[in-house]
Length: 459
Ligand code: F0G
Image 1 (tube, protein in one colour):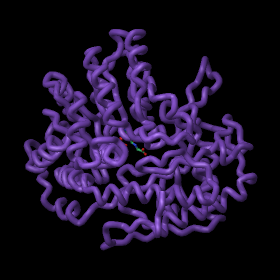
Image 2 (cartoon, protein in one colour; image 1 turned 45 degrees about the vertical axis):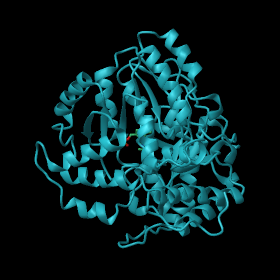
Image 3 (cartoon, helix red, strand yellow; image 1 turned 60 degrees about the horizontal axis):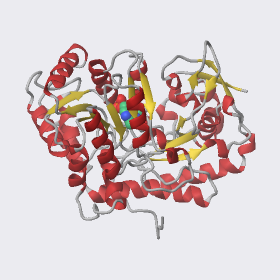
Image 4 (cartoon, protein in one colour; image 1 turned 90 degrees about the vertical axis):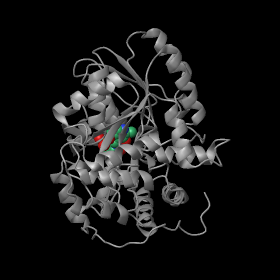
């Protein structure tokens, strides 16, 4: 990671949005009112918002211009056909089903495919995927390679699924695995990419076992960029060619367009199976809308079509990935423990190393999100014990996930290098005074996805 200066933004700014400024005293009060949950803080009271890279990106002038061309017809809108053509060009599947966002795609696909007691493997399930499987009384299973849980190990494709684990699960749970999933990039495991070789190997296994393979492909272009950068034989290929090859190895994909779709809302399912597609469209009509709009406005479909084209631009992707690396470099120079290598959309702080004096039962990563907001008005998200702990037995003990992290997700085309410098400086300052940070206890929560609404108190 060598930068002579910060990576230059490949765009200039045409519209500006003021940033919230608050005092430490105000933030202390806001935290108390929010039950020490940063999801409950009004965005206006946040200085730098790194809660998520989902739906928070800035649209381009072409995307904004395209909104005026949105065809708002209920059925057969021109905007749908454009959306469908763009997705077919990149993903190559026969059917394209719009949804209002990624988790709606999950809910509909899982309703059609998953029965009570089934097992659904993934490298690592994202929280909403996991929840949508749990509500069907089925079991999400994470089969990422063991190395993924070593936060310091630098290997190029730490998001890979372990084929041996998949084979083992197949033999143990034969007849109870309705589909296999691969998340690109692996959000819950540090935003790490999956290699083409691994995708090919998993795809071969799935074909042998006659199991459909679906990508959770929100950050597909970032994954393709890493393949181009790191995998032999792909240096000279375009991002589009790499995407086409990745998707040719699967049966379909679920996509939240709020990430690499460069849009503020939207998602889709794309797949080859005709009869499954019919079933999905029927489910779509019941809750999302007619299959040519799926809960979106015609103008949203236009913005997503353009966004999907723009995300394939290598100069965009290079800056995107380098911007994340730049923040990581500044943090590392300040001695901050972070997950390595640096993923595509975020830097992940290792909260258990940052706050070794706070036990897991007092949620160190959550405590760090609270401290970051209190000290600097920065909002980040916990990816640790609050988000992913499993409960054992009746009202029982929590089993904590292997990684206890805080994710600093970088919204696309939103913040400049100086914003990132502010973030790094603030975190380095906080690190010097980390002894003062206290743990938290949960006072109310509701499963699944308790992190969105739980309330806490300092211990
Ligand atoms: N899958 C992955 C890997 C995701 O990261 C997300 C969303 C979803 C599915 C669901 O998509 O939000 O459109 O319903 N991730 C956001 C995040 C929320 O902050 O990482 P959605």
